[in-house]
Image 1 (cartoon, rainbow, N blue to C red):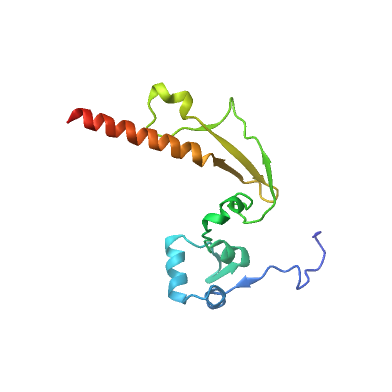
Image 2: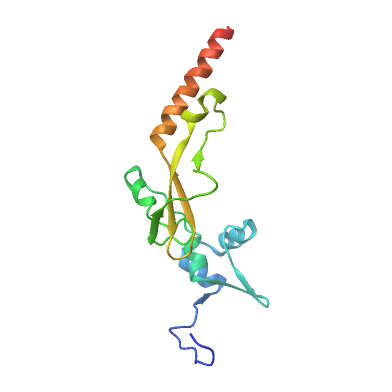
Length: 154
């Protein structure tokens, strides 16, 4: 929109009052006030008036995906929840890997888990996803090694 251009009702941002926001989210006003205190929802103050944008209300909703939807989760931006992600490689001074915290030094190379990167075409957020199968294998090895050490101490 260019400056000097009149704001039409279609271009005007939709503001929600406390009452309207509670109705939109289907929660009570005390719940909305609690979320505001706990920092779970973004709100705006205009003088003494509290207002919400539609994006604020949409962002407070958590989505829990089933096992069959795990691959689809990778296709949604974690910030703006839009499905316009571009797959790519996240680079730094070298390749980026995830390394489990309790990994022994001698297993350092075998413990690197490659990550897959996606960038949101809309907001620019970057998501990383690692190889969960390799992580599971590493955790099994770590647990069996810890159990073996514990057994040897007995």
